[in-house]
Length: 624
Image 1 (cartoon, one colour):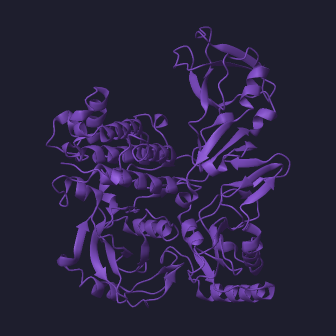
Image 2: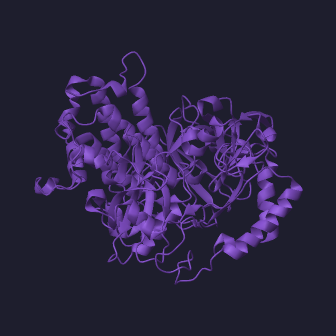
Image 3: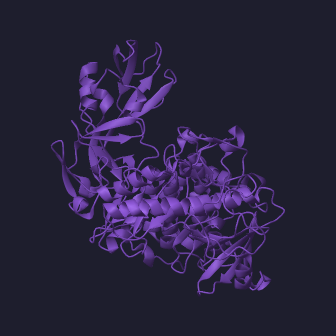
């Protein structure tokens, strides 16, 4: 059932007043005391609306941060300015348990286990053949059952043990503890976690702060909002004209739905009046959902009045877009895809737009049309293409209106019509890789996550400054709540499809990681993902890359335009990106990193080339 099925005056009143509860003054100070630990932004006290969503700490008793299934006790927050804190799983204080989820990898959260930690190794089910330099521990678990664990330093996979885990610890002891109680004390010292710049995780935060606002969130609707100096609350920033906002987002047990926007800074009486007006407006203007009209429009034909909206998304009339694209003339055609053609258009307000016209013989076009609307109308990220509007879903021609990105695609510049002598310099290529990874990590961080399912260089648009914009969400899928994958027939572009997805029909975030690994190899090699003119075993770029890297022949794969033999820094970074691509292309999805780890690795590679005595300015790298 959709969230708007639960709309009542009381519910709306609670939603609105909840946002007002966290005022500008209340969140103005970035520092706060949490059970004796001094903490600061982006963290905030649970249910107060300050800080950013996902960084809320419970300050009752020991300070705790909830991530997925686990509660983590915060032990030290003195490194927040460096985007690091020390924490430990709360379970270690409650029972003699060394299960792997006590130190999970924090996947699909804003946090990542820091490389500042040391690591020890846990092995499970080792049988009678215990590897050398291994210490055996045992205790009764929470169910009263007797369990055994094996730990050692830097132990490789063992044939006699069925499972091997890497355990992060703040500091590795000189000698392994001999008793389980001593080992648990070692784990209770915790480990460090890191997180990205909040402006990357929440792109609207930068816009909010630029207008003197404070980034926060709605405690009830769990969405970003901007608290402003005059006491008002805005959806994006203090000058967006949207006033106080209330919106639903895709969170646990919630579906995507429309946003209702109310202007003004109001008191309690104003809230009540506004609540009544919202209910009246909503009950009068909300179209009824049924299978015939797809829940959006009652009108038929092309006479739909321009200016109407799906949620906050404007609806364009067919005739308006027909005129804007010069009646979909061939001269205005920007390209063709598997599901439709894209045309350059000019709206009456002077905006240049890209109009996607879905093919009428595409049996899944309504599903793809609604997919893009549902996803892009409520997501805002600097590296995702913006959706400006659409036609009504029940019209004969389904049209989507995007921001126009004038510089073609990454594929065009690597091996297409925009490829130029010398090609893209390495700095530009690496920036595109980082920005694309950030966009995908942003999608995967939602709860449930969004899987793009068609990551490829042709879906990475570039603006005039070569800034990346990920596009084409027609195939995207939402993961089911509390389920790590979506079971669906494989779709995607040959050469980019995850082989395990193709075999198991299970789509996960690691499927996007595999596809992105192919894109990384394209960036390095400037070769096509599939090229039948290559040797039979090298038609697939992924297979070619894996073979070259395993054989130590990466130089045979690298684009000659990069001229890596003449620039040691570029060669080192190319090698590092190739190593990351190799991990992304692992056949077993569990062996691949997640997109947050990919982002961290790429940022480290980029930063390593822009600082230090032997560094190189990436943007100044040119090829001869």
